[in-house]
Length: 178
Picture 1 (cartoon, one colour):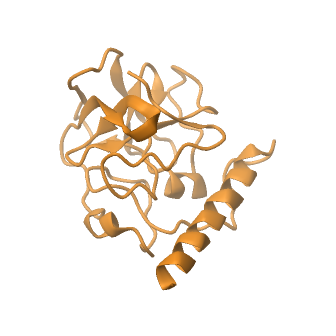
Picture 2 (cartoon, helix red, strand yellow; picture 1 turned 120 degrees about the vertical axis):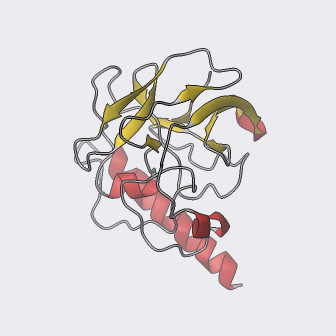
Picture 3 (cartoon, rainbow, N blue to C red; picture 1 turned 30 degrees about the vertical axis):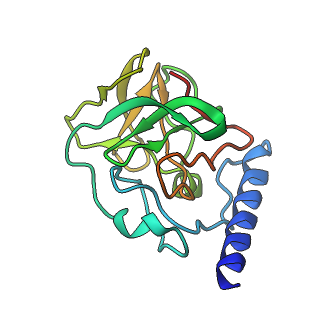
């Protein structure tokens, strides 16, 4: 029963956040706090204590080198990009502008959808099935180096806890097709 309550609480937080992102105002409502954190192979811009995600204990590692991005089948969403040593699904934010060199996801947004990052000076590698161009941008809010695909920043979703999860598909958030 406590796990169901945690799951319900996490779902309500995400719904509240999405409602805030969908408005014409700021994309980062101050009242939403994440329930857990990103996969271990990334260095999220900020992390909150994990409440329920099993993979969150491994999420404290920082990126120390480049990351490999691959295309793999993920549940009902089809073949999409996954990244890192744990193969977690990556997402794009439709408010990001291609080739702008900027991320529109900051503040509370980045705690819900942590950036896929690499260490300064490192470059991402294209694995099997990746047909687009990988690159990086320097995040303005935290100075981290975020991975891009075809000019758009890449993110993880804080409630994806295992390879094959694709729980971050919401209004303005999409999985990334190769």
